[in-house]
Amino acid sequence: MNTRNAALVMKKDLRGLSRERTIVLAILLQLFVALFSSFLMVGLTSMYDPSALARFSGVKYQVGYVGESPELENLLRESNQFQVFPMDLSTAVAALGERKLSAVIHVPATAMDAEDPVKITLYTLQNDIQSTIVNVKLKEVFLDYEEELRQVRSGRLDLIPIPLEFPASRAGPGFYEFIYGLLIPLLLFMPAIISAALIIDLITEEYQHHTLETLLSTPMTMADVVWGKVAACVVLVPLQAGTWILLLALNRIHIQNILQILAHVISFSLVLVLIGALTALYYRERTAAQFIFSTTVVVVMLVVLAFPGNPLNLIALLATGAAGMGQWSVLGVTLLFCCGLGLLTHVYAGRVSTRAPGE
Image (cartoon, rainbow, N blue to C red; front, side, top):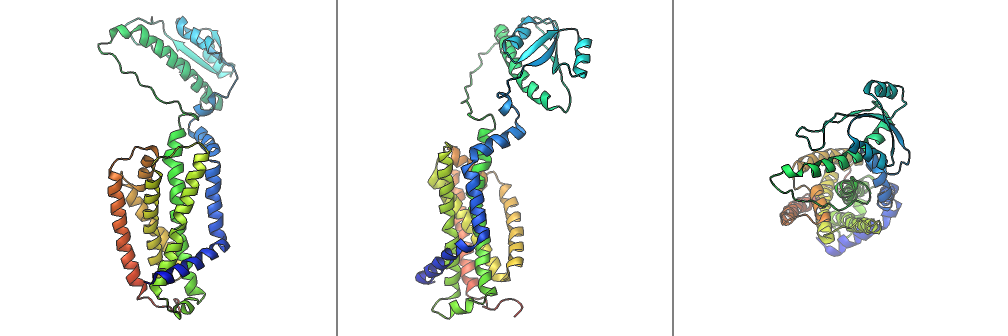
């Protein structure tokens, strides 16, 4: 392979990428996700974790209280989130059915220092949006009541519990799960998928536009052309991934091990790009090549994701600083796979015909 010829092909394809509307729109979509990651995080978190937005509600909810535990009743009143109405159970449940109450709490007459556990029964309306918020607010009060019970009954413990202190999340319990488990792997591996799809377009359009013969009439070989296009696709990956990491940093999202992350993303991207190049060289027609490539990628991803050390989990661990030495083994295996695919691509590129299918 002539490096100079491959570089000329790479420059030609990079200049032409600005005219590819599909690629430009895909990059703009990633840019939107990265720029507004904090906004998306709050919206998506609230879908599966209503407690993330519960603190923004300033309404006082009417609650029926049935029981003889003044400690819990005082906690409900002190929370300034509920209007507590002591009443009997049947009246309270009837008022709840008429939607005059938001919830009913039934507490049996069990002393805080009693041997028996305190069993609290909560009555709410089914399939009601307001009940979701009320449950979240009541959960906070119940946790405070549980803490008081633990202190009163701490004399029964034979062992001293180890206190655990967790860092406060700035955006609710789902912040870290969404950012490090979904957003970062999604943004960093999206350029790999885009580049792999791009290599198919770059190779098949040479066949369909009958420009491959012109390129090969120069001192270039088919391997030079293919490797130039592979380089043009791979060089986009660290540029995009680095940009997303920078934009996430501007959103005050701290990412560790940036160099290792980029190394894994580039190696995984090269695997996908080489698979796409082989597919395009074999079919030489965009629709068929894209379909076969998409099916192959789905199968490969399902197999890879079955292993704990898959790239998505590894990126999340690296971003949080929790990855061990096993990351280098994964990188080494990926690079060996890249070498094998690269050799296969180089050999096959030298054997394929310049004719498009059907000619």
